[in-house]
Figure 1: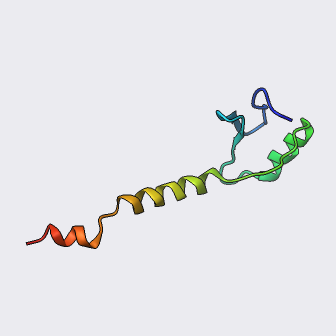
Figure 2: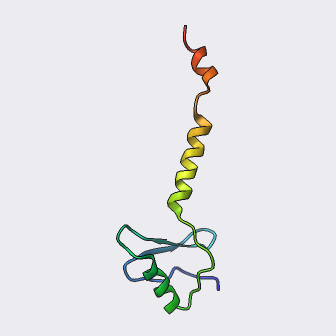
Figure 3: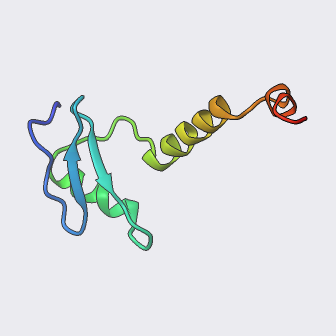
Length: 79
């Protein structure tokens, strides 16, 4: 079932991204089970899930690795 708009979930901030993927903010101390219970009550079935924090961490690591100076570049700058 494709969503036309993000559902309203009590205690959680929800939005649809550009691809129609539902994003739900779950903060420390909140139970992920509460999200699933509320979605189930609204007839929304979760077929897959991923954490956005991990994707951002992976992106950061790739950016740092890509922009890291090489050992060759470091030694060339020294006299």
